[in-house]
Length: 221
Image (cartoon, rainbow, N blue to C red; front, side, top):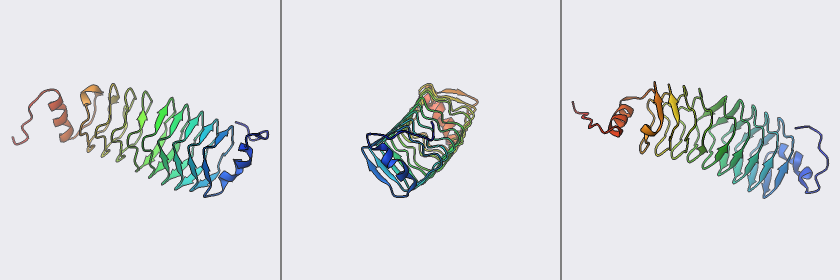
C-alpha cells in the first residue's frame, strides 16, 4: 500500500485525512487503498462502511465505533484499540499481526482467513464472534467473554483461556492441545467435539467431561 494516491472520483480522497481527527462520523462510505498508517482515529464512528486494502498499521482508536463494517485485505499490524467497538463487522483476509485490543467489544463479528497472532487481548466482549479454521495458538485470552462464539476448526493449542466465558461456544474439531481452560465457564459446551490432548481443566471441567462421556459423577463422595 503506497502513501501517494491519485484523486478518487468517488470522493474517498476528500475524506482520507479526516480520519486523523477524533470524532469523525462516516456512514455508508467505501474507503479504498487508503493509507492511515499511524493515524489517531480517536472516537471516530463508522457505520455500514466498507474498507478495501486500507492500511491501519499502527493506528490507534479510543472509544471508536465500527458497526456493520466490512474490511477486505486490510492491515491492522501493531494497531492499538482501547475501549472501542467492532459490532457485527466482517473481516476478510485481514492481518492483525501484533495488534492490541484492550477492553473492546467485537460482538457478532466474523473473521475469515485473517492473521490473528501474535495478538494482545485484555478484557472485553467477543461474544458471538465467528473465528473458524484459524491459527490461534499461544494466545492469552484469559477472562474474555467468548459466549456463543464459533471457534470450529481453529487451533487454540497452548493458549490460555483461564476464566474465559465460553458458555454455548461451538468447538467442533477445535484443537485444544495443552490449552488451559481452568476456571473457564463451559455451560452448554460440547467438549467431546473438540480435539483434546493435555488440555488443562479444573474440577468443574473434569466433571463436565466425565458427564459428556456418560459417567454419573458423585460429587458428594
